[in-house]
Image 1 (cartoon, rainbow, N blue to C red):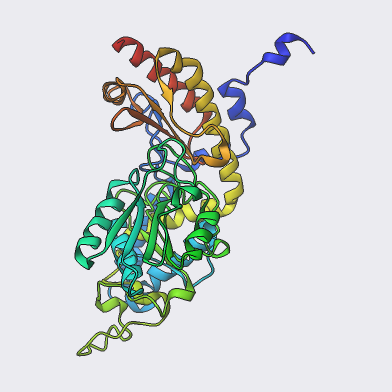
Image 2: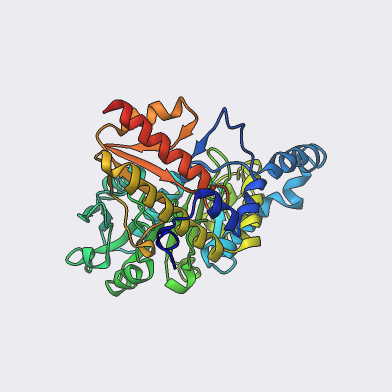
Length: 412
């Protein structure tokens, strides 16, 4: 074998040609190259599928326009749990009857965390890491104030993320619930959900996982891991569109134990009974509150079927290859300019985005957006390269990293 053969690195064109999921990219809407040269923000908002515009038009014309109010009796009353079950089956490793769709991520987090605290008298401590997404932290601060609970803060390494040993000394007989992100929003660290859940249960507490940055990009096995509660958004890797409703998972073993705090007619035992007082419905329906956003649930259905057609294992394999490629390019083009890769190098501990730090990256990101190259920025210095496995090409990654290099060079 010659030296050239030994050192040859596949080009982005060669990687795209060998990609078994390459054909799936044609399913997504994409603007012309002069409008969008490289989209590296699929971990914030996924691209729409082409079929979604057709299906939404059909929904407006038929299910809504023709059936009108009859749609509630014919299907829409069951839409939150039907779509929830499909999310559970395709992406969560969850048996039917444990997942529902309907509120925003913030509201879902509030309902689930508050229910976990209220279900355990004498347990008045909530555990969360200081580097978790602001919404998670803010909601917990609010619940702690509301319920007279206290917060135990995990001081984990922000690059390596929360590991099971970081919980040592924080769990005990007063711990009510532990809230962690499965994939860290900043670094992309992928936590050991099974191991951490087991450790939390040993202390008699409940475990809630925020799946916003993992659902649809990382295989998840909530039932097998024994997870109690989970919440996730649907506009990232599930491509539900801006502001699409979140989902909540509640293990069947917790249905009768937990009572969600926002009582509404849709979660009542007899929604149309117009009863004098509230009686929660049986099973997962008791975690629903108000009228579900049926129209906003439609786009994610299309993405769930696409994911189901290829399987989460194939999605994960492509995700690992994309992030490896992004790291290789970043090492070659960005690290020599003073940038630092702050995401795990071990693919088993990494989700589907990487973060690269540099003091000038806020200005770099703004500059890139004007040129149709779209990563995103997270203070203080992090530029995130988000890679959606079914819609991102290797060529797109190469174009994006080269543009980051050129913009940074201009500013140095």
